Image 1: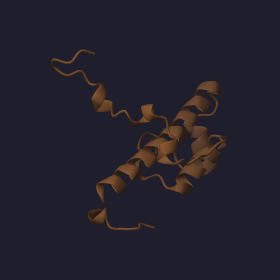
Image 2: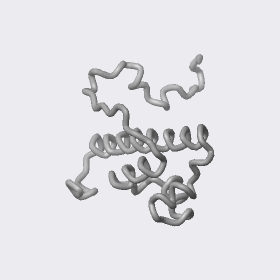
Image 3: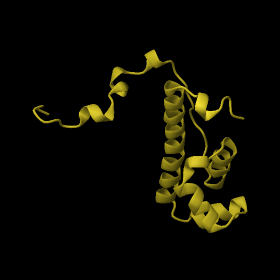
Image 4: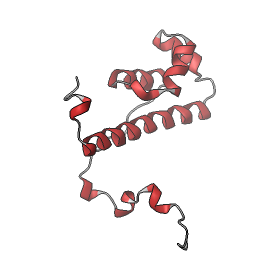
Length: 114
């Protein structure tokens, strides 16, 4: 379900969606990579077989997560024998200030000492 059309979406709302998606996709892909590193027998082919999809489709899912749904994420967690151990959503003010450093603020600028 989409709450609003994309044309009516505000910039802060779009940014919140991008951040949330990046955090969730990043956590799942890091866990999959860790699982594969620790146990090479847990391959994409085996995970694809567990989900009843082709190896090519599994590869596309892992490498192009742009359209993952919650069901897709749950399927990947199942296919790779993962668990969600901790899931927290916190208030902005509960985050340490260092989380708010914009990546471009770290780029060296002419005349600025790093």
